[in-house]
Amino acid sequence: MLRFLAHRLALAVPTLVLASMIIFALQQLLPGDVATALTGEERDPEVIAFIREKYHLDQPLPVRYAYWIGGVLQGDLGVSVRLQKPVAELVLEKLPVTLELACLAMLVALAIGVPMGILSAVRRGTWMDAAANGIALWGLSVPNFWLGILLILLFSVHLGWLPASGYVPPGESLVENLKAMAMPAFVLGNAIAAVMMRHTRAAMLGVLGSDYVRTARAKGVSPLRLVLRHALPNAAIPIITLGALEFGQLLSGAVLTEQVFSVPGFGKLMVDAVFNRDFATVQGVVICTAATYIALNLAADLLSAVVNPKLRRA
Image 1 (cartoon, rainbow, N blue to C red):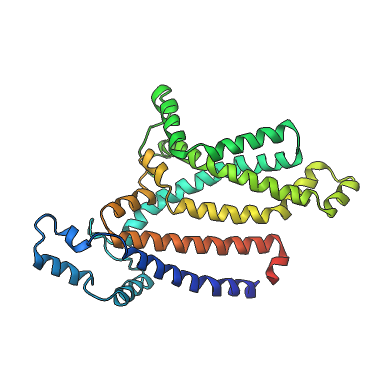
Image 2 (cartoon, helix red, strand yellow):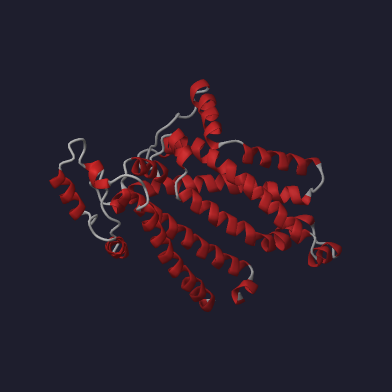
């Protein structure tokens, strides 16, 4: 297992370095000049020169990258030129919000998608299979922002059960926090549940048709034990991989959903930074997202190796 972990880490480090280079290089291609934008309408040449020198904008691209990556390695993601706050501080402010939303959305996705996928595979060709596939198709087809607006009209405007927008920290009121996060978590989890259902169904169908499952069925193993003990663990690898990727996408910021429900997470931070040409914030959020994706992929590989020991030799 240690050799397997070392091999995966050896692949993760250069991937993260390459991602940092791409992030920094693409950021420089965005139109507009940060120094000019910060000076306002007056655009005093002395002020522009001061800003360029302060943020190393007068240096060549490789030198600017060296300054930036050196700070990242020390935990310094730079300073937001718009808010005049450290980017690391902004990330730490928004991370708990996005992390909570991502966890709740994944709980919704797993609670709906995996059981539906198993039921659809076990009852293949029946009305249950057709109903599960129809629900999954609906989840894939409905835009998140449209579903969010409908939920606000129903549960906030007409019924008055849930707040239409905003965020309440769990330390302030756990009940109000869950009320505020219920609709955005369901909207995000609904879309992921549809994908999870399709992958679970496909994986379970492949396993249920294998020789050892037919042998276990011929020996009289109960259907429930056959599915949960024999089939599901062997079908779990693609589900684990998909779950890690979807969770990473949620942590990167669900822009439209956060905008609809006014959730102050990574998505809103990113949108505001792009519109204000706050390059340091954009770079900081994206590098954190890339590192999260790599860490989640590594965790998925390790968990898959635990579930299926054959993968440790890969």
